Length: 150
Image (cartoon, rainbow, N blue to C red; front, side, top):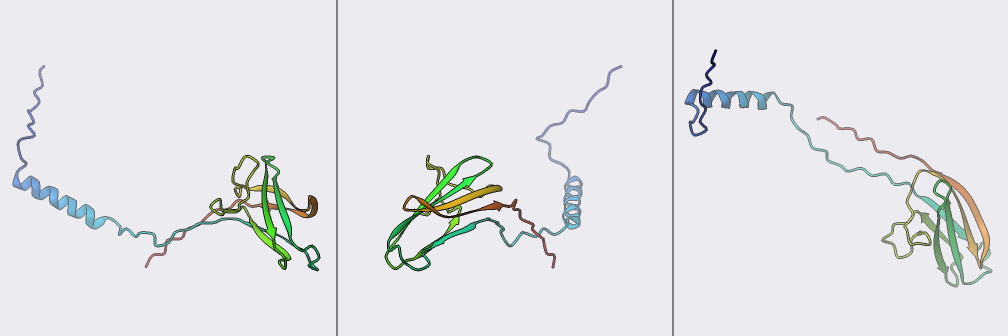
């Protein structure tokens, strides 16, 4: 048994009724689609820890403060050296520092520190001796966005 299939030629244009039916179906689909709303804000979350040292009575004069942060998960150490001038008794720094900053926390190989979740220890050395130290934990961070309908 033979079945014949009608020949289709792309050069044949659809009839006027076919074009009108297609246009009506397209209008119906577009009319039934929900209105699209674009998001009007951007979101970012960055965790940072403020570390600091202070010569409480201003007895040292000028000195260099070397901050060392140790990531317990990766075992990497990150360093930042701040030179304090006469009359400047202390300094606060943020960890991690943005790598575009001329003085940023970096490893011995120059790798910039990141705010990876986990436990950290830190210390600040003055004249090669540990002056202060501590520990902190970076939490997991995330962003939640709520779309507000008018």
